Image 1 (cartoon, rainbow, N blue to C red):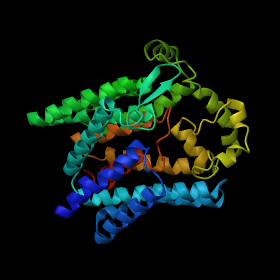
Image 2: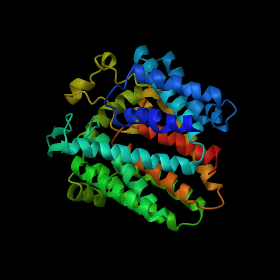
Image 3: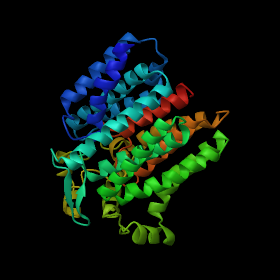
Length: 389
């Protein structure tokens, strides 16, 4: 018991920090270490029901990503990225084995959130590393220990939502104060990052969280979550006037979403050219392949990714890979729909899932090789579909 706690709160925390910040030592050594540690823990617990994840739709999805090596435009990029996402998958499974109960997961998530917030508070007042970036629109913006202000904004959106959920569900006064200050600090960091997208998602997720808490039927929660997962992508493609007003006047954004619309228009041609299979997982954005295209010359810069999670996924593993991902979501919604009661964990997982989806309207984190969003998706799938918590 002591050894598992030591692993969780010391060793695993270090790796989760690396994944979260995506800034330091996030390379081959980290990937190999995560993979080996994950395999070691799994080998000691080979009878655990957590291993059902390997033969679930999540496992099938990884097999399809591996299969993309057969037609990838860049073998090195795809094989490297596949090993990274496989390592994250194995590492997360081993984490679930050690954490066991979902109440222990909530406790650990609270601890991890406090660590991340504390580290960023320290560098805010004692700038041991570069924590500010110049932005053409906003001037100097704070990104903390994250590699980019958008990374800070995305993480703080998750923390703010989780803190608000903890504040509403916890009973001891001490815990309530912890969640209150965590929510306050997370929101302040979003403001400091000047990430209007993260702020908008936070405001929306707060409304969703409190709405879900009032709904007694899990079927209604599943249906609403499904609808709200689809609606934002439609609104981006067919933006109504009232949305345009909010984007321009309230969030101070242009209707091209900071040039993202131009990127999507250019990428639509390449999607049509290889719609079913894609160009290989993470191969499309490899510099060697981009030089063979007119993307950089058309846009005048290298966008590095599609700035939309679904477009990026289709470019990598095609419409077939996207359908497999949709099957994972269908399995999730069906399991959620079959619940008898709307528990506090159903509320949390549904709200977190929507935050992940909405972050991927303008960013890329759905199936990124080493991403906290990918870890959370595996956790939600396990505790909703397999564990049925």
